[in-house]
Image (tube, rainbow, N blue to C red; front, side):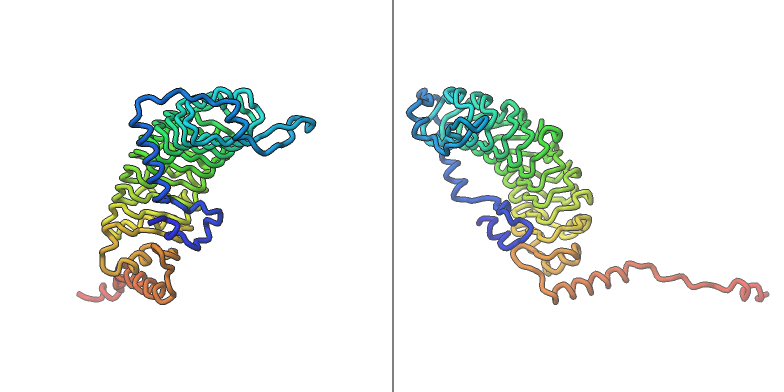
Length: 342
């Protein structure tokens, strides 16, 4: 089931960033990747001028506006192993080289006007490139990338690294990635969230990894959307009051067994939507009511918004628990009356 269902009509994600996974797409890409990994060696297939002619489009002005050049190139599904020819096409702004057999993207270092890059479904082991001053969107999904080093584009807003072999996030410098608002790391092998120190980040997708807890995300004060579906999380420690913008949290398919863990989410002042389906705690009696008792400002749990009746009942329980927890006032003794006794 897609998380589009989990987030339908949720207003905090108007740009459609809520989509966490598309199972059909994932299966197709996984088949493509296995095909590439099973083949020890591909026949050398360099990019040719004829392929360029077929793939080029979008004629635009360049430089001082007196010259024109094609700025978009789409050469996917061509079994390419070499794109060195791109070094001569310095005016390219949009490049799609997906579903080839590329292991080297270094020719793209010459494309200093590049705005948009899609290199999904290749055989890349790294997303490292020279700093591209105008690059805003980059996708390296479903490759064989093992680290996050060498990514330092000042205008990069969206980075997609899903479906790779990344164990730990390192090298993402907030001083160099000043514009990064969306980071997609779904379907890797992450065992820690340490290293995602990107204060401008708004959307973080960490589903389908090996995470057991959340840690090191305290600096993400602008984060609004956090997806942690299908991990191994048991405790909700690590959610800090500094994460003051978080509105949507998806913990579906984890191992949270104790509803008392939800109390650790009270420090998230803007949390409005929480997904806990397929966790052991959802089997407890009155699970839905207890979640609202623990986190009073929730508006939506799983797929359903809370009704006013549910909210009133939770408020009553919360007040009763508070009263029971308060110590009874001590009786005051009149010391002057005590002194009158012999």
